[in-house]
Image 1 (cartoon, one colour):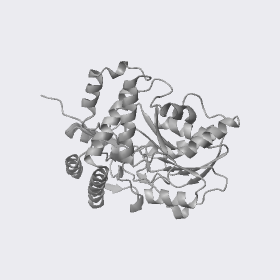
Image 2 (cartoon, helix red, strand yellow):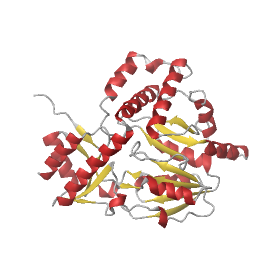
Image 3 (cartoon, rainbow, N blue to C red):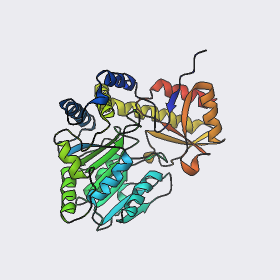
Image 4 (spheres, helix red, strand yellow):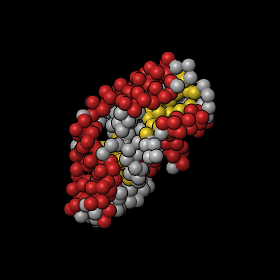
Length: 361
């Protein structure tokens, strides 16, 4: 009897994008695990990945695309390189709270507007402290299934033109349609919506942020060592990196971004909305599940969180056993009462239809 094929609805590490395995095979065939990061071959790979991500995310040339070990690392880099004194954080879940905690650990004065787990933010209710240099937003709070819509992030910047806006888009890129003339920086890692194995963080930052980092450094502030913004940027200008990076992942990311560009980012967004609506419509009619995020405009399109009438662990185990479908458990304290369903591009409409059929049972 052949083993049942697993279908992952986990919010990260997540289901692999359908072409990822073949791209890794090609990377091995090309011996990319053994090339120097100072070689013409690597520079070509970096350039290709930058070009494809620029198209996919509609990035202007004022923004650099830099590589780190993870998106969590980028929280630290952003704070060290752009905040001399004060940061401001919108906190409504475990990941936005960690970003806020990092600022305190780095001895910055961290201001916060906090909402209960499962609630979201609109620009009209946000008052940014006068001396805050950086506004930290989360496009998609992975722990609670709450999104902050791009339009609200844009309004926030327009009302605070002299402050940096950074967007954590870890569990939603490339879904949010951000206007990078208004967003100074964003970050994501590859193991969620890009459907790749973990081990690569992508930091998008503009020239104004670089200037601020250089100014802090000049005044003897600490902006970090090999992964400081000036160091990363200086190497990026030559399509190089300060140290030997995850070359294979950079190559595969470029290929996946190219595949996504062939599909068209607008089609990916429409498809994501369609699947999210199917899941939320199911939950509205279900007597076993409830939608956790009450405000419809704050409901995530990429991580759907549902309350379960019975123990979440039982639901997850039964589904995995019977169908090979793997759901995410609720985050932290919500582990026993919630399921999280990742709605990333690797999950197709048929998968979602089948999942709903089984959840109905």
